[in-house]
Amino acid sequence: MARYTEALCKLCRREGFKMYLKGERCYTEKCAIAKRNFAPGQHGHNTKKMGQYAIQLRSKQALKRIYGMLEKQFRTYFKEAARREGQTGEVLMQLLESRLDNTVYQMGFAVNRRTARQIIRHGHVLVNGKKVNIPSYRLRSGDVVEIKEGSRSILQVKNGLELSNNRNLARTWLDVNTDQFKGTFVRLPKLEEMEVPVDLQAIIELYSK
Image (cartoon, rainbow, N blue to C red; front, side, top):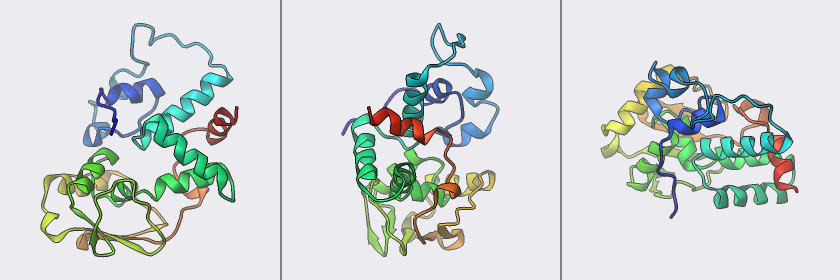
């Protein structure tokens, strides 16, 4: 399976805001945005006004990178969102937020989505009492996500819980009990409840061409 293997901090600099791809580092003065808040490359200091297509492209690239996807997978999610009833932007975000890797991260059991994927692939996560090692597994209302009892002391989980003190984890669609290393995916979130740092309408316009 194809995956991005280059520098993660470069992605945040390209989009111009923190996407919290590096976990702990993003909350310190070592964060690339704090040190070099301009796009990478020799022309990174240029601040040209972006046209409509550039805005659409940057919005799509940013959202894709936040959730750790490549183009083909992200486009598949968009096509499914467009087919479903409701606002395409909200449905797209609900599909992304209901992924298992994202939920493990949002519950505070991993420092970022990349680490959450690693924890899941290595078999440390249970859904409704059964091991699930597919990061893209889609959760439904009432599903219980839990870190296996024998995996609760691994470094990735401990770091995630420590870092959660610096993050705003008030996710109204999740019911989390960190003491028991488990949480419930209560329902699909509404658009106004989610943190959406990009222009969803721009993404819809881009794919609608």
